[in-house]
Amino acid sequence: MSKKTIHILIIIVVICTNLFFGFPRISHFTAGDETLWSYDRVPKFWRSVAKGNWRGTNLCDKPGITLAMISGAGLPFIPDPRDYEKLTRLPKTPEQLAMIEKIYFSLRLPVYLFTLASLFIFYFLLKRLLSAEIALLSVIFIGLSPILLGISLIVNTDAILWILMPITLVSFLIYQKEPTSPADKSNQKFLYLTGFLLGLAILDKFVANFLFPFLLVLVFVKYILSNYVKTEDKIEYFKKAMRDYLIIIAIALLTIFLFYPSAWIKPKELLNTTIYSLAFAKIWPLIIGTIAIISADIFLWKSTVSRKICDFFSNHKTAFVRILSVIILVVIAFTLLNTYVGMKFYNFEKILSDPKDGEFFENFFSAFYPLLFGLTPLISLLFLSSIILLTKIKSTELTKNIGSMRILPFILFVLIYYVANSISNTGSTIRYQIVNYPIASIIAVIGLCELIEIKSIKKYFSGIRFYFLIFFIFIISIISLALTKPFFLAYSSKLLPAKFITNLKDMGDGSWETSQYLNSLPNANQLSIWSDKKQVCEKFVGKCNASSNQKYIGTSKFDYLVSSRGGIINIPTSKNQKSALRIGADIVDTKKLYSPNEYYDFKVNIDNRENDFIKVINPTKILSN
Image (cartoon, rainbow, N blue to C red):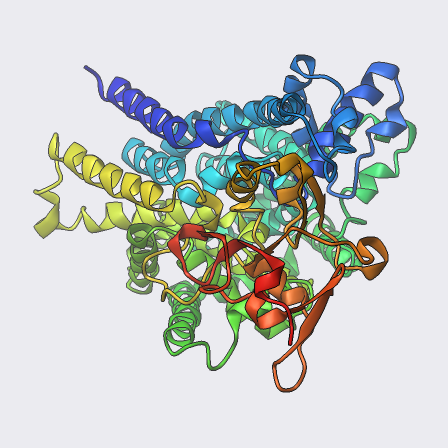
């Protein structure tokens, strides 16, 4: 049996394992903001297309078109979701509940299948860029990642983004690795593929605009790491690289235009999804101005300025790479230290629980926290080892696509992504940096492959013994999935102290289990509950209110209250930390309402972490004195 066949079979086993854990979960819960896509945006897109209402395909600022195109494959199998949206907080029949679950199943399944199919895309692209072994191990890490499995199970733009942005980057790196020649232009297809994938990524979520400046950074990084001696070669490199870069932009814009009907009648939508998007809202003049100046320098002034700046870094390339890797290691060391001493310097959990309110340094120093502890322990340790290897880079490796240098573009992606998020005053929560999880997996695999290439270690992993390593990694990954099942998106590494969690902006974990408990109670359809997690309401057969506004809950008498860790941040507290909250006709003790270990009739610990919970309470147990 050929190596290629074995690798394909292993990928199929990874997909089957992913299905084993993920498939039963598809219809069983509702994630945060998912109702917007399932009941409104996805149906609206295809309804507008069917009617020729091109303006109606403008769904939101995401813009979410790629997600709507994929998820919409499930619409023919369900009734109009709008008929069920109004039932969210009202009593429901078992038949209505079953149809709501069918709606979620039908709209999620195409997204989930797309994520599984993407594992083959990752494999073939990474094989072309790096090696078959690195590609295979990367697919295992990516395909069995709890967090990536979790995000793949919901109708959300991030469920597509974590695929499109990394493969766009890999496609561009293949283009850079295999420069075309006048005699052979076969690699030119990766230039076009990069532009096409970038367009689809931006159509999915505006965050993908980050790749516009980042790909330009890689143009200069490649020059710095190359050995251009003649001035003519340097000038020609910049001309060709910049020309190809502009081609990528043109193809990306063309892709956006072709697949975004709203842009057909309102071309300004091209700007709204790119330079006018939230990703560039504060800095678009700087980005456009920089590209214009660089273009003028390259095409009009023979790249005089670009060459001088890059030549300086090129002459000190070893120091440049080592200093960069040391900076990253220092930030990671601070992240680990701050976490293990109880977050005395920065409260990462507080910063990430309100990710739109932090300052630059708060957002930057908290960024590695969800990544390091959102990866499985094995990947996290290999990720750290890979960066350490980068500090030991040899000068002979700097001009070749060998050794630790293969890590550099990926680690630059993670670092600059955090800087960009911090500049935009956005905290890098798990969902806001979901694209970094496959990138980190690739970094970890490159580091692993470098380690097993060491002479004293290589003999243990050569030939057939390499597959014993794969088997070991496979078992470790399955254990991680089993321990966090079914709350995959809430996964926290065992390296993280038990009192902390990584996913501070949860996506409704535990809501389905809670609703099922409530539905099992006698006369459940006649009960009235209040919940700080609105997702509970959708799958509950009785009447449910998820508002804390007295105007909407008035003096209602609730049979049960549902509280969760995520609801704590919205509760006011006084100076002495004692507070009361009016919920309908009752005034309850907030401490009791949100106590993780007391005063409950039913409780779910998310990812087996005591402080991450959702519980059902009889209000008589927590009345304020």
